[in-house]
Length: 91
Image (cartoon, rainbow, N blue to C red):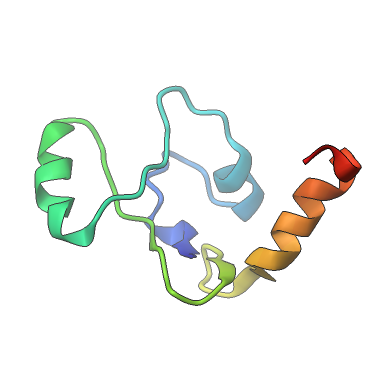
């Protein structure tokens, strides 16, 4: 997955951590087939809706910051291992 923070609709947030971790009401992320993008966005008119990234075939999670520099680049395998580690053999 590739995410671009510069494409996140924000109001007055100008720092990467603020965009990543703000708890703005009503904000959520979904994935859709690109062929359905136009129909999906019409469902939310006149609310703000934006495509902030893409799902890729590469097993890499990458986030570009507001200045377009890469601020996160990690494999999906490493993320899964970090998620599973606290649970030990439970999952």
